[in-house]
Image (cartoon, rainbow, N blue to C red; front, side, top):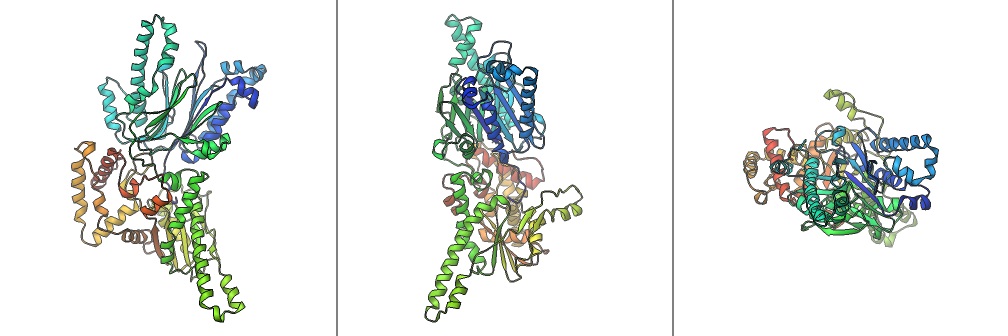
Length: 632
């Protein structure tokens, strides 16, 4: 994705099922779990670079001993910063007491972070700032072990205001309005309630206050707590939580919007936001890694009992298609093939745009994450070339000479690495004219491989705002003097904001939205902009179940091609000498390529929850009124 776009968070959970001595004996270290957590978080650093956090819980410690440790960082390399601090603490303890290296029990007692239950998080912030207070995991502390709650997740709630006011009705005083706080306090409220009920049962069974604690831990019903907590949530989420005594859970939203995968054997239970992370770190095959089902929670009790339990009634599955197009690592077997298919399926439109002239066309990609779709595009281009060769041979078969046959066979698909991002450059000047000139040089281009008679086809993951294309990439590519530049998006047109985790909160930042506005102005139908505003404004007073997406009406009069052509005009303006064509993937072909991830609301406006329709209408109202506030 050539446009800078903040997105997504990642979770990692490890629960060791054996005593620490077991891992010391088998793997040579009691830090087995910590090491695995580092790898799992590092393998998901693509999901979050604003901050990272790590928390651990030690099981069965004596009163007065520390059993919860947490560390967070918002440094430029937060994962490395966290584990450098952990490693430094471990080395300090070893230097102070060399005997610790061989005494696992003492390590657990004296060294923070060495426990059986661990939770990690990598963050891209979409709500609030980037202070250390906004970095997960969040901790809700209490002197009762089982009332301690640690929460981290990959989520956004569309109804944070409603959840906030519900907490106030319960008599609480939340310290912030952020969705993470409201979610944690809601779980915490029902956790407290469940603990009180179990304490009464313990007393009824003749247990004193001290002996009541293990009774409470054993009998807490995590599924009931989650059912009560989550019944009013509207959003996309993969939520992980740890309780101080050792229970843990991962809860996934009912539409399966946000991803969560798990693996278990007799040594460990692990959860991550991406399947190949687990495959790589634990060296397990594809088929052994399972998804947490939509609306379900993976619950791990303190005694190691594992259950996969329905918490909420699953909705129609709408797993985020952007996970497949861009967010997740392409090393997943399914995602790799899906991205190749995205490149293949868009090839007919590309061939039409270049009049099937593969001889005078150079194919390339930008950025590096579009490389897999590029391979799929090339396979389809090669199929087209083979077809052209066969047709040429059959057409000339009676008079075909050896020289002509060699000429036909010598025709190859031309591929080049044309745009290379110069990571050393930083746009440190904020004054607009100076900054734009610097932005135009963020990418280097390869000279001498494109002729003035060539088409230049360059594939991107998606086109969101079009800013980088307009201010940098197209200007650089135009210096190669091609006849035509064809910009290909392996994703459809992004027309609507996301409200479930991706940082796309404002309509006016989307180039497809601006293209529709310009088309209305050109055709004298600009009045519809205000008409839609009044409809959206009226929707905000309705119940979520009654709200519909009126922003769809802005796009209804136009074909996909009309909007694509207007996008091409917007990003090229008058500064580009080459003809510019923009091609977007169709929604139908997206679904063919990614049949298990049909979440497409940012393309179609078909939001999987009622709150999504409220958010898109609010975003339009904010656009029309010039309100810079977020829509959720």
